[in-house]
Length: 113
Length: 113
Image 1 (cartoon, rainbow over the protein chains, first blue to last red):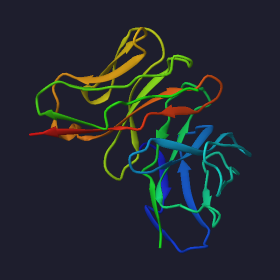
Image 2: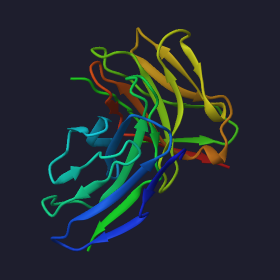
Image 3: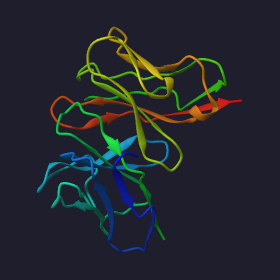
Image 4: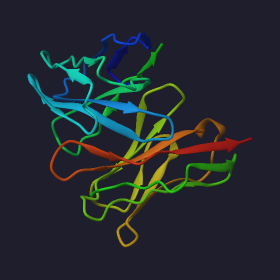
């Protein structure tokens, strides 16, 4: 899992709550990513950030928000607008080079109660 | 649109036998290709990548992959499977214009003793 940490490992959310997933990296990478993983599906990109104070929507950004105030941190908020948030969430980082390897954190499993 | 196909949901191999996990990539995109492995409830681990050069790429844990331009394939291989190779394997292709990866749906590899 390299130098990327995600917390918590497991998270439970009640209906209507916002929750924030933490992602921190000490690899000095400029780019960071959030993916959602559902059973039987590949990874789907939620948001990505190429540099501090900048981020772009991925394929499934609705109901999610992010911030990138520091190079090493890229927290993801799952808002109450996300109707089906139960999933495994993965954070990754890479250098700015477009062909560079992405390195992944251990993931957070979010369950809606 | 770019897409990555992993035609097999599951591959079963006896321990000690050679294994192949198939991947075909989109001809409209760059043939910059990656293989990752995921163990249960863990993040993804990078195995290998093809950018340019030799068509046979060697990676971690004894895995290798063969790039075949005429068949638009990038199959993952290992000469002798181990039970510990049992995991979920993802193929991915880099997009042309940004840092995003297009992911296959994943193939579950089961190695039986």
